[in-house]
Image (cartoon, rainbow, N blue to C red; front, side):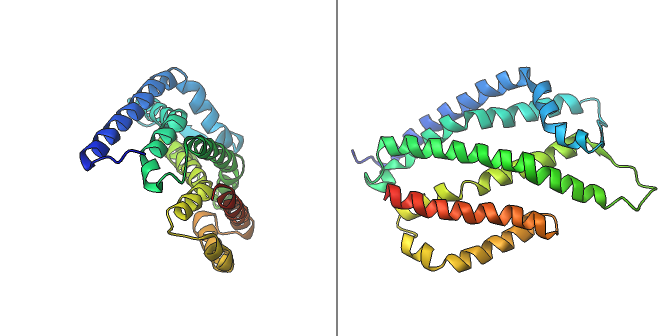
Length: 234
């Protein structure tokens, strides 16, 4: 692979950033057209909990639609952005990763992102909503009326955390390729990693054992998958 100067690296980064932003811009505009359907899909878990959603400002719905459209545009653009990112960092691996592996890693990232979003939407959000709603069961004078902005912010935060957690295999594989970690060190320190996962589960989940296990078990599974994939691409 041809050696590039610092200025050439900056120019390449600029071009790849422009391409990424163009993808986000185009898909955000398209997403705005479907923003009502996207919002309806996102609020479905809380509607099932029979909670009310309120909008307190005249401009709130417009700003919410724009925000949701941009976030969804970023999500749809993710495969293109990931490919641009991996193409840019390819020289750092000194030909240890070829173009086929770049495509494979990009595809793996998207599969894991989708898995994380599904995990957050189907498990974490319903469980957390039930937990927080249960806090007011004995408080008859409290009426649960959430604002649409706060609910969407909370839900998107949960979905982002879930998607990032499911990127553990890719992160570990890259760290191994860069020589920062080794497969032997991971397997040797497996018990410490599991303890760390239980700490993360306690921080990221509602304070009940079931919710914590629902986070910890996928983390352990992702860690084991990371070791297997690392052996495959090494």
